[in-house]
Image (cartoon, rainbow, N blue to C red; front, side):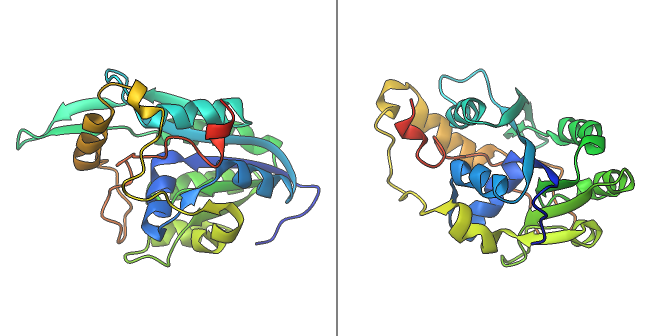
Length: 233
């Protein structure tokens, strides 16, 4: 990774895609560590996190994460996830944040020197190209150390620098919670388990990576809270 101490940095995190990559690599992201790590590498102007949230349920496992990030230095951009029924009659939930991320990145590009995109989605290749024409370098964080790779090949080629997420695990990771982990506050949230089980079965995104990855990047079962967020209520 090449960073310069005086360059202005901006982080753009595609929440569902980034979570899917970390999950495939078998670790949980400590977002406090992530923010501090990139603050060390330059002048961090903004760190933005994008996720869709299903709002008509009693408990969404993504909401505590979004709230924690919002209070701890991240610019959180959300919108309601959309439910639909596919041709086979199966309930699906879609949450695509590509447009929101693209618009914000293009607006911020003239004011920074280096943008770090946390996503492997091939749909962002043209966005990266457009931002590069405005001047900033663009690094992309995803992984090729999974099978299949989590990043589309054309996005990797377009980036000025590719950073494998696996190489960041010692810097921003924490051990994954065991499968039987239960947040002690979850008992206060009716309907939690039913929603998580249904979400892990049903949540899909049709805008998949172009190469390899089979498209579970919107299967959002993101951690109840990042890092040591449970200590900061």
